[in-house]
Length: 140
Image (tube, rainbow, N blue to C red; front, side, top):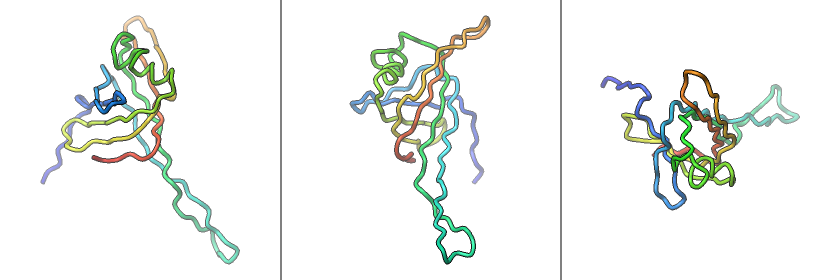
């Protein structure tokens, strides 16, 4: 069977409202990489002839999204959106739904950083959000 490849257009990042209803974050331009890592833990002992390691606990990633700045949109605003999550230090459930895939990624995250701009002559106003995933990422 040949693989089916597609571009990222149509991919959604959905945010839980805290009550189990997921809504796509409006007008995302890009979603950064979600790189999971597992540190090495030194397990060397006095009878070892070389360093020995075991795999440590996974380190949840940080990732950025960039989107058009829509201060009055419910997914961006200070009442229910990303600005609200940042201002109040709230962790929420998220779903990353790649286009043309039956499965998606599910995880919990909080907004670690929130940037307005840049504001440029011939560019749309942008906003960048940095998320910190907490816990595991699950393929559903």
